[in-house]
Amino acid sequence: MVLRGILVSLLLFSIYIAGAFANIIPIRKFDPGFRPVYGTSYSFEQAGWYGLEPREAYVKLLDEFNFDWARLPFFWDEMVDQSGKLVIDDLKFAIEEAKKRNVKVVIALGVKTPYYPEFHLPNEVRSKIKFGNRLTADHPIAKDLIEVDREVVGELSVYDNIIFWQVENEPLIGNVNRWKIDPSLVAAEVDVVRKTDPGKRPIILNHAAVGFYDKSWEELLPILKPGDVFAVNAFFKTKGIDLFNAKIFNREIHIFWPDHFVWPVYSWGLASPDLSEIKKKVEANGNRFWILEMQAEPYIKKLEEAQDLFLSFEPADIKAADSFLKSYEIESVGLWGAHFWQYREKKGDQTWTQTIKDVVNN
Image 1: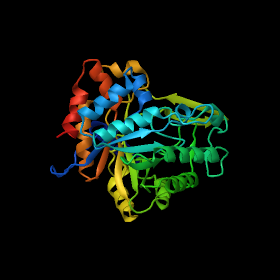
Image 2: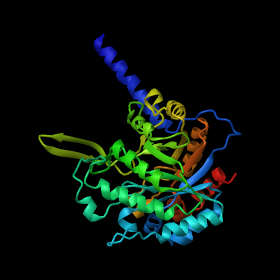
Image 3: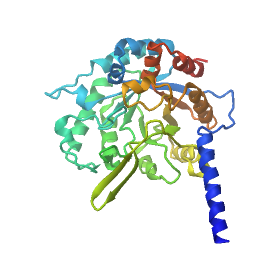
């Protein structure tokens, strides 16, 4: 009898797993008349990595797609020279070109901003952070970081098409070095941004939408004021650095993630991120709820993977993800993957850019 119960349990568990993988982006009912405001993220450095001419590709993106906003990241290691002077000509160019086309701008600043390797740090700053550090308001790098935030906001606040300052990107999620940013440091950064910006523009804080069990994002809500935005990043077919890691007898054991294997995020039923509950709590806090990054590209670690015949994420997945998010009537959605779409088009594949146009331009 016990054996039969175990076998039945295993069978049901197998069906549950198989169902999640067979229906990675669940189909949900949505109002066909509802349309969110769409935006995207853009990095000149990432465009260059893909072999694009960054400024030309950025302007082409603005001209061809009806995005309402563009998120532009500040990279501390690339945009501050050795004398401490800001080198942000590309950022200014991007803001100005957006203004010409009535596209609004979100500036992402801090120690951790979008795009690999996430923590964009000068070497002398990186050397002050140890493996597994939680960066608090009294960490050795905090004073310099806050001063950099002050300078960036002071320099860019003259542009009236900047509508939000995003402070840190997924601060509570650790990177490969297990670095995390404590809410105390996020709060200190938000405070200096508010004080420095004469326009008193609202703030965006965000988190990765992980499982139902993760409530850490609620630690960020007290930092926000009414009218600020709390956003999550929605990736449907996810990949990690390690498939499995453990520490055994003081030795780190790592099994690296297989190249073509992805893990479902939203097809686990009650175990999936609960966007309805997150939205409800955010709005009860007096804030707006956004999706800052909706997955619209596969995971690409090496350039040759961008030409893979068996991509882990396809153009049809973009429309499925868009429909899924529309069911929650989220006011604004950012599509993640602009450089990849343009790279594929450059290589003769227009299915990605056409799909984005179908979603955004109609």
